[in-house]
Image (cartoon, rainbow, N blue to C red; front, side, top):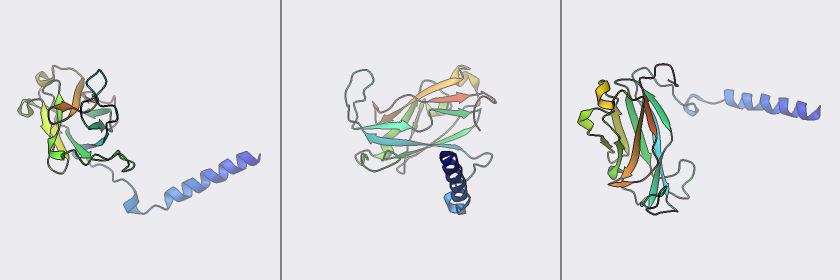
Length: 169
């Protein structure tokens, strides 16, 4: 009975704290037409190498959202950061953000992108899902990889295209 009472009080306290947040502590809701945003966190590569599952770079870039859902003409924005997203204990100041790029298996971001999107000096990478299904062979799951310069620097996340209601907005 004491445990049940404790759990009830803890739940009530947690909800009360959540309700007391100021507006600047709550993540803003995306508006229609806004690009989908996902971070890329770079963290030190402690297992550098050329074997399968290894990356021959000083840092590894991890896209926070494993699957991004995007229909035709959906804008997507990636933001590269030089820390692991939680602490600065294994940050990667040696990565020059303007050398970070994403490489796609096909032209899901349009033929003009030539299967590659490159970051600006601030770590922002922007793209738009192609309006032409032929650009991505009508395949729903579009793999891509993070690169630093010409070196693979992270695993392969996915853009899910033309899926309608199969994923979150």
